[in-house]
Length: 412
Image 1: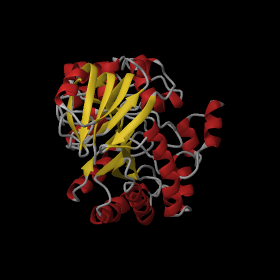
Image 2: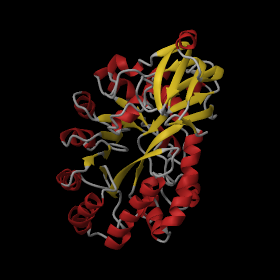
Image 3: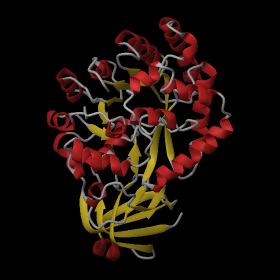
Image 4: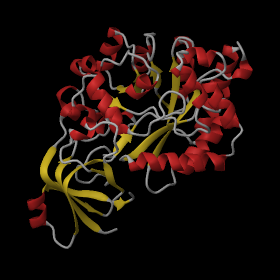
């Protein structure tokens, strides 16, 4: 692999290793004005002022991105990117004022995607997923967490995880697989909740662990979905089988999800639109990353945005993600998620950028330096056609990404 130097008006390095950024470090972006990034053999070789790198390095291909911003490749740490059809009928109902949970109770919501996915072949799901991941890449995303959870049988959950594994063979994006059998209760189980939880604990989780197809196990803990006790059973089984916990926590109502995530050492507690003060304190005193998904609340017409400012000020590590899915957040654009974080959550542009790079990587426990541009880390780089990084969230609704490098090679 050749050597290249990328020069830009601003280079954002997000220094600090692989640990989650919290407090003041949440806004430490390591900005280099008139900077440059040297890439060699798939890794970042050096970062610094462009004049300095020109003196130090010779024989490198130089690409001049004057008037542009270079950042680490973006890390989307919460998505449901493998699914079949879009749910346009539900969207129309919500536009007419029908609540999301009411649609779900009538057979829509997650179970609509479940019934659709069960009928699709792995090859069809791979083809659909490839196109959606390509769109994510075009918006600057180079690493994506992808959940199962639209199968809800042993074989269909494994089918989804095999699809994710096949998509992870694509050379231009990395996927991190999460098992989410506890996403909803499938229609064929009717009111037999305990029987389905028994299936997750006794068959699904052991089969997923034996397959090696997932790193994490997630649960949708929310009134009307999984209770605290059901969540405990699933997470305990996950831990016993070597899977790292995550939780969909406190999205619409405060139910102790954040506290339970901390108790079980979850990598992240996600959503948190209705997190309690006790939940904020628990997250602030833990290694669990608070992953906020404002795009979901925007799309559902909700006003209970998560308290990002209180989380940051108390010392919690905050990440941002798209929650890309067909029902409640059909966006692949982490740039607009940054805009929402700044305008609705009270985050600064610097905090938002760290949240979709270094802290997104920390929420996935990557441990290899993705989400930063420090020497020695994988050369995942995004280039944005704006002269100041603050313009990425400021000029909202547009895709400013014009180039992406993955593992040192230009892929977009």
